[in-house]
Length: 311
Image 1 (cartoon, rainbow, N blue to C red):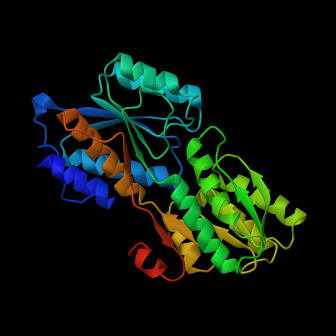
Image 2: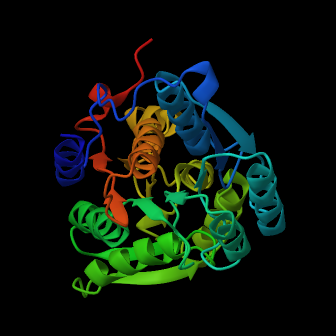
């Protein structure tokens, strides 16, 4: 029965809130899982951890977390600490697809499943990847942008960290679509950290070099909010569109206020819950595909009201 429900879940790309993959553990059977996310203070990962904790609590599980904050060595050491604590499984959002492979190797040596959530790993020891359809999301953002621009104008790409294939795939999907529009020119493309400060600085620089810039693609909402700040300071609001990613509440409010043109809702809370459900299925012995996708939704002025947090 569970296998059928898991297959339906994957096909529909959603996580039913009532899905019960395991009965709550007794005190004697208490399960602890480990969590190592790429950043501690990013709203996306804060929400994801909330989803992880919430679903784990429903299953009667404990959650042990370690800090990484985009430091590869710190993430490796943190995972090794989780292994030493005897966790039954690990959820990780790897900072780098290759640079933290030692964490996956350590988990495999300890016979502990390690599930990548959001970002993925090139390690053969990755048990499962709970992913987004990266290239398709990039394509969808590009199609939305090209339509808004009428197929003409200069665009800039503020990509994510160079070592994370997630952001490379997003950018490749975006560029693939834009190549079909001869009137659109990718005037700038750069990798970098997912911070608001970086969004401000690079957007300022590119607007100086290209004052007629029509759109800025950003790899996440923090970068988008920084780029939006630079666009507004340059009196380009409504003239240079800024697109985000993740659908965190500050970005949704910015879309409502017409400062941010659009973002992509990935629902990090549900993503975290799905990560726990997938790990639970694996621990139970059910067959789980090596890659499971989360649903994504384009959020712009047309549907933002339905997505704003209820107050």
